[in-house]
Image (cartoon, rainbow, N blue to C red; front, side, top):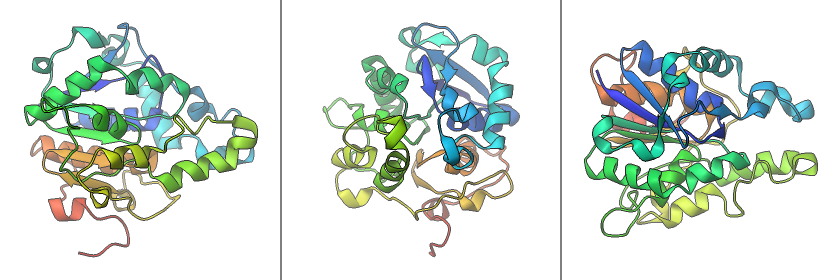
Length: 268
């Protein structure tokens, strides 16, 4: 069994992208270690949990029931209640690294943390399994190897796509402003700049349908060796299961590398 580190900001992380992987990994017997800037339990994006302020789009945009249930369980777990401090961690403290996302303002210190970027770079440099979803891919893209280049250079990846990000922003900007625009530059654009080629960014099919424990094929991921990425909460169940498959044989479902790079509707 592996020890998996999930670093979090103090607030505003996405509940589904964090709690679904926690549920899958801990359910398989892996040890999940959380870390926050100050060693206190983090707080998920409240709007994603309650739908407050999302208006008629509440059902479509807030966390779905599977994610909310997983978060409720995770929030009272001993591991979540007793996180480590970012600055106290070294790569020897974990076997694998998972980077959840989120888009609200509280994510910025996490995405810009030099401490976390160094930790991510060390994990890649040592060949440890790394999973990143949504804005978590942006943290990976900003992490620099010893040669000064992004750890994602030469790898294939996905992340929150430009179309997904700008659609959510356009639908809510009138009353939520830049809530869905963490930065002026879309995630896809910044991540793509860190890659060897723009074609190394694989957006997958546009969808508003979310995966579920019984519908893993609805999700979309990109796997490149020990690194796996996904786009949004709607990919979280497939992402968590495929990450578990990288860690070892005790897994609920396996995907070979080729299928892991395909989403619904894509053929080999």
